[in-house]
Image 1 (cartoon, helix red, strand yellow):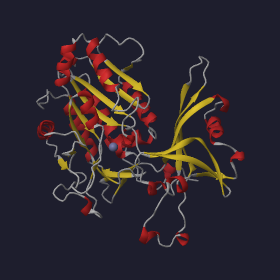
Image 2 (tube, helix red, strand yellow; image 1 turned 30 degrees about the vertical axis):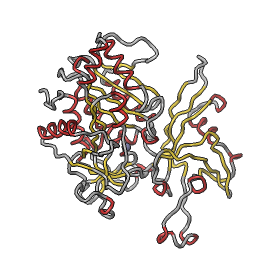
Image 3 (cartoon, helix red, strand yellow; image 1 turned 60 degrees about the vertical axis):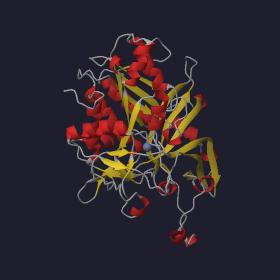
Amino acid sequence: MPRPEDSYAEPIPADGYMEDLAGFIAASPSPLHVVESIRRRLEAESFRIVDESEPWPTEPGRHFLIRGGSVVAWDSGAGHGPSRGFRIVGAHGDSPNLRIRPRPDRDGSGFRQLGVEVYGGVLLNSWLDRDLGLSGRVMVESASGRPEPVLVHIDEPIARVPQLAIHLDRSINTDGLRLDPQQHIVPIWGTGTSENGDLLGWVAERQDLDPASILAMDLMLHDLTPPSLVGADRTLFAAPRIDNQLSCHAGLRAFLGACGTGTDSGVPVLAVFDHEEVGSESQSGAAGSLLATILERVAVAAGLSRDQWFAALADSMCISADGAHATHPNYPQRHEPDHQIRVNAGPVLKFNANMRYATDAQGAAEVEALARSLDIPLQHFVTRGDLPCGSTIGPVTASRLGVRTVDIGVAQLSMHSAREMCGSLDPPLFSRLLGAFFCSDATGKVTP
Ligand code: ZN
């Protein structure tokens, strides 16, 4: 039996940026794994983890902090002092998906089934008839008495949400597919009944744990089809979670490239937040205290006075990196006709007069100047006047910190599908722009 990675998918050339992105996505089926993927790369570059319940490190240098499914990294050494403010790239690491309920086991018509809850704005149809794996974490009892997390990443086709045969719903192609998440999105994960085995028992066995030691869980499903280059000319890239792991990865590479360059352009900060897809309001979300608290503690540790801290914030800037909508060739009428967006035509600056995106003229001008100096083309997105606009972590970060923020990202199709698609030439270009942003001063000039 071929494993999913042996399937038809066009292998991504093992020599560059897109292969690295494909590897990052494949290793990160849940937001907790995004944090883990980032943690591994930071530690390989000598970043040290900070425990926020302990006194803050007084030595400047390379640090990161993890809170739940969010991670923030910064480098206050090598000339990057907070007195020049902060250069922040923010992104979200969560993607819409199906989350396992606390008591998931169900029986139906001779099948074992899983109760799931829909997380975020899922395109439900895209989860039908896919081979699904399981990921997330379980919390287990430990000798210390404090529950310990155990990461779970099972890349095996254990679940599937089967479609109804067309013979039983003849009007589906003319009347459209209607899906009730409670009734129709109930994955099958075996035959028989839950007496043949429950989900937690199975996970415990796979993780070599005592089932009785599991106290709680955050588990979710993911599509197993590997990322692939698409098109006869291989100029497209299809993968799960492009929104927004593409930006997490681009920001991470740019951040690691900028750290230690000795430029005096403020402290480079990478902030990857959980819970954007459900509104950012959580202990670790962008609307919470996480980033503001970290930046203030970095400033205090560097000896800034309260007045200097506010001045540093005023000198700071944030890029909110998140996916943008490419114009869909089959639905061009859904897009603003004077703001057509193409794949492989450069990063997309996103505007909204009602501040669903944080970009204003001053911030846009700085990014434009930067892009010009690098010869990177930019595109400009606004939504149609008769359609509501999506949003990002940009506006909440801007209002929480009072820092000028620009929304920008890579054009894609199928946003919030279990499998999305973008151009294969845009992601490295986007990362180069973010790298230059980290090394530029508040006037947009890149410090050599
Ligand atoms: Zn997004």
